[in-house]
Image (cartoon, rainbow, N blue to C red):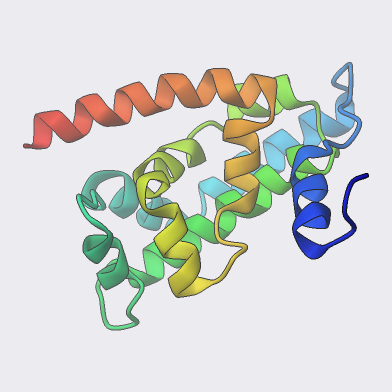
Length: 163
């Protein structure tokens, strides 16, 4: 019946979610606090500010420019994207309680909403794993889908206001 090819294996790896934690515990709370503390680190704080305020790609070319090492937003983009990918990997792999985690760590979905329209092109340019954890949270995790819908609307409003 079903094939055993690479495409089938990839589809299964995306669709099979880990066993989510049903109740948050003190370990979840400790990780939330550690992740929050990391966000307060001065370089990461400045990188987050730059990405939230200055990174508004309207076309893939805008995103592609940021991927180049000499672009002023390259280092902030790489730092913020890798930080949120790490944070969202905890949800994707069942390490933390999704609802508690996303109540406290939704900011990364703003970056994902900005790159999402160009995700296929981004993956061609930088690799197939780009934003895979944020994408899983936004599309596969029930709590993430709700949060992402809210964030997408807010990002669209902010983008429209920028002109």
